[in-house]
Length: 406
Ligand SMILES: [Zn+2]
Image (cartoon, rainbow, N blue to C red):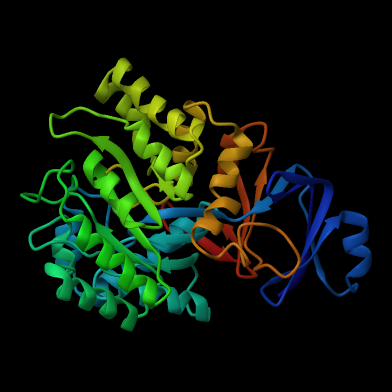
């Protein structure tokens, strides 16, 4: 597909935008970006042109924490475990299309079973099915009976942990996900504040993954788990809820300083749920939640956007709701967009190929009506999505997974 898109504003990423700009897409890559007149002048007359006079073109969005295997229901984990592979695989493909229709052109899947997200990743990359690029962790590593054990990633002790990492590498995982603490969605599993692994065990996981060039993403709700994960040298901390055994929250500034100093990534998984949590938690608790996000930012922690899509209350079509949660906390809009594009790509280790609009990068683009820098909700006004050079329009007839190839 060879085409030129133009709009009054082109956000290239990393804080820059071009007025009256254009982007040329060819063979899946961005062939040119610049002012409209020169990009069009350089393209042969046969190249298809799409002008979007009231729109903004920006890099495709990146949801850095999803679970394509989960159905957003109360039994998401058991359902994923008990659904036949072929059926679950088709449902996952449908969820991938819903993300694409919402302008998401890359996701990091942080927990599937039996390599299903890895398989879907490859099918999308081949162009067999429509969907965002998937960076896949495969099955998360947990303790016997631990958080998300039903997905099949139980491993106890150093030998089993090394074996678990090697299996993931063998099966084609891009990174390793380790459940450092319990979580909310495993009935009878350890509570979210409780640490599942020792520091030594976490260090083994990190070291073994590093031998194969794999970063480690640490699921960590509890304060102690966050601290151990940081000390063990994980690449990213997911959730970072700062839970204590007593049921409270303790944002440990010494750990925050360590997170920032090591340049680790934090994905605080802000989903559409933040709206209902204002009522669920009460005004004071909700404000404290926003304040923890602000404090991490103020101390220089590198944060990225991700929704935990697939778990209860985190649908696949509501990435922008999560971004609005950061807005509610007072993050500048431009920074939020970077957390969902350029910065997320860097965190996922694919900053050289996506997350920005520059010549030679993958053609992952989003066209929205309006100006998201002025009004972040304009990111919902999707007019066209281009993923790896393939163009889609949202299908207005579809209630769920509708994107139509152009
Ligand atoms: Zn998750």
